[in-house]
Length: 536
Image (cartoon, rainbow, N blue to C red):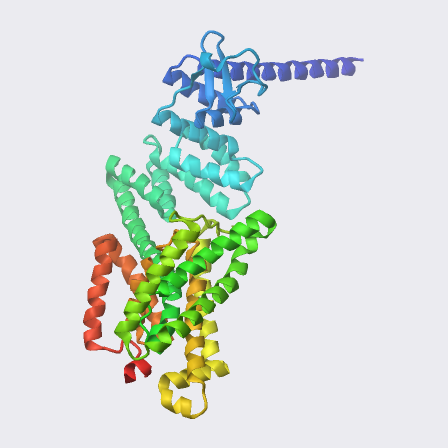
């Protein structure tokens, strides 16, 4: 009987303690909400901290609304509200729609820069133990930037439970950021934290160490300055690699635009000023394909580029053959006249596109596989540029295979090297001329499909690349496709390294002057190839 009474007493004590704790948490939550209604920064700061520590499941939503500028209060009623996307007020404490509350009677809870850091730290602390790995990582990054001491205990708990190495490293970096900034922490603790921040090695770590170096002396300052030097060297290396990537990306665009011209100009000796318009027609072909898919079968939009590439090749190839048969074949051996004729043709094609599609830019969407960015070390790589580089390489390899392994490629090279001998061997040189010009135009059309993903689709699209394309072909060596590849990538990388110092326009002028001087020494370019234009 006595044991039963003791058990009952213990059970009553447990219930009483649980109720007291629940009441205490509820009271803390209500008091925290009341702090938002005073419109005082100090009270708001205290309210954020108390709300984060209350353990209430509504805390994250309320602080998130405060961060987004959607938290409001009514001074008379001492109530706090959250506005949803349709500006309908909801009771912050319960999350239910607030009846009888006018939006005109509500005032926003104000924030300053210090409070924004407090908000970031509070949200970070609330999500450090989330089941979602992405939210845990983002929370660690928020705490690293805010460096609020109130998040230390949550960080210690999260580090002890974390199993993902990447997230655990981010949590330890956030903890190190707080400890390194604590002026009352032990020196050895701050030195260890500085080493952790140094190992992080990004721009945020550099800013943090710069602040510590400015406010510290002795070993702390020396360690911070050493970390700054190491991070700056690392960032400089990654910055150079990023410029190389941007240069290769630009070079792939130049390669796509110039590789067709390497055939029509380099191999056939035709100065085709309408080559840029073939690129433009390819881009508009992509636009037409996507418009048709949007109207008739939106589910196929992800395949739109795969449909547009062969279609653009066929359309521009046929146009190229028609141009060669109707204009170019009468002007072989007269390069200046082909220049004038194709320049006039380019104006006609531009005006025709303006008449059909209008002068405004046309929207060409990017499929899902070409959208977004990912990080590779210190590089930020966009999927769109990455796929364009891959596409340029595929086109280059495919063209090499056509020229080296097909009967057409053999006949084309024979006509290029010795037209009269090829004709004497029974090769229909007129047919080869037409097909070669169509091939160059078709490749330009495929280039337009790729360029539609990174540039404005307008009647002037081709004019943006025609001069650069001629520079690539001349610099690489007239008619040599490998020279075109090397020249495109070289000019692309050089342009990206010149832009920070000389600017985009002056950088192009410097490259143009360099090519002029280079051609004076090597008139046939980097890789010379014997062809019809050279013989003439």
